[in-house]
Image (cartoon, rainbow, N blue to C red; front, side, top):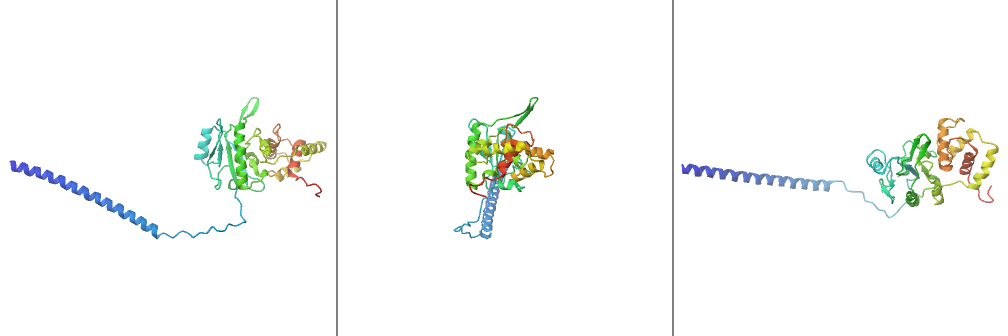
Length: 297
């Protein structure tokens, strides 16, 4: 009986030893596999085609930035929702300006890459503004329709201070012309109204960033146009000359009215009714006719 018990105990110990040995063998096999995989990876890298040999000693003089325009938007959403939409969805922008006590920018897309902010757009013959522009979104509710009419939300002075600083830097980096800093409503007047009639374009003009009509010239032209207002084809021609996509049919249709509203929201923010009046004609005339130097013919 005792011999059998010892034998049984011995068998149990032998089984444990065998299992331990088997475990070590398995671990060893896994280690070998990992080592072989690592060696194979090194071999693949070593066998890959070598990179191109580059020499950047010279740089071509004839080159320019892809960026030709800056397009300014409002978000119509609060900061949290704006950030989520512009960083996780199909829409994007290069910079998002917050409405916090001390506004700052989220840099969401590198300036060298395209952001999808403009949508279907047109300005001075260009139809793909996404590919040649930098988009800046400003956190602002936009407007709210009430029984008393449409109420627009003002921009924070601190937001404008930050915006002007950034615009100056972008203009310097990409040599952007003053007439190429635009609102979304400029490039898509049939469907967009941002940044709206409370956006301080004249403040940007005072900072030397955008083109602004000379007040004395506007007053002179307005007096002339009050005596005889141009016809609709003239207005449509001038709006197109300014840069808009606008019908050329001689009719005050809905599309033409929307373009007039977009123009007036920017240059005559106290009245933007889409009516082709003498003051609107004067603004168009001044903005589309260059100032001649003294003695020029």
